[in-house]
Length: 386
Image 1 (cartoon, rainbow, N blue to C red):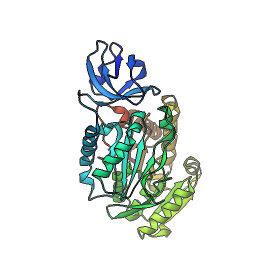
Image 2: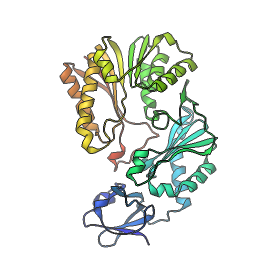
Image 3: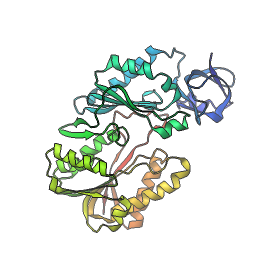
Image 4: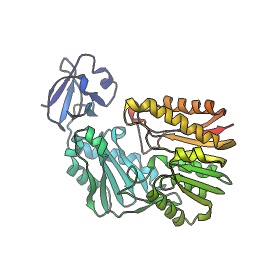
């Protein structure tokens, strides 16, 4: 039997449902990398089962707190349960996250659906060993034309794995069209950010659409135009979209076209957002900030918080009195309290009073275990700036 014996006291968070066992908590290990192990307390009593990863700071990722078989039937059941949670979205969108790592009790695995195609992320050795089995289960449960792997190379490196990206089954076109309500989006599955689209911003795109009528909108870090298209669809009189990637901006142009929206109302700027905000002199009614992660490690968090303060301060200076700011943070290492604190500090340093209108997290297809705050990576605030 493969097992890991914990040091005295190390079992407490795991018994409370935390799905990670850190390498420093292990007293003795009888297992190989990628194996399913029994997690035992220092007296040898059973706590949980999970995948063992000897080269990762997170040595064990828990699969179950029950003494049950971890076999094909187990994983099929878990995937079916995850799919069932997404049923309410099927009439709303053709793009969604079907499996969300620890949030669906499948650590190391994420599956996104883009119409007839799937994008898969496999981030741990345990899940990597199960690749063929998972593909077989997906073939039994879903109808699709192709699967593309977009496993994050940096995450896999921390797990002691090599990079893995490319088609797994079938053929996947460079650009796939999906729908979100009555809006169409072109998604670059193979080369786009994340797995091609910001699925976690679905509800905020709808919010922006509702807020945009007659407004002058600035969409910062606009990527392929999810917010820009939503604002135009909502009747914005002008949208200025800023990003540093020409490829993303070209796809934004196409997304405006496929939705038959007035192209003359969408002004596209290729620029570093910080530089743009420092030099811009326009005033806006609504600004959207959706930057990439500012910190990849805990050591980078203080600098990341300074970045959030500066970014939000610059944006607040460009808002008319009573203007709206939708500001987002997808940096997992920065807590909700730290991000909100940075935004409040930006208000103080810019001399603007703030009304908090709405707080948001990721939507229903990005579930988070209540015992796993590390999974609650997405934060957003809608503010009125006075």
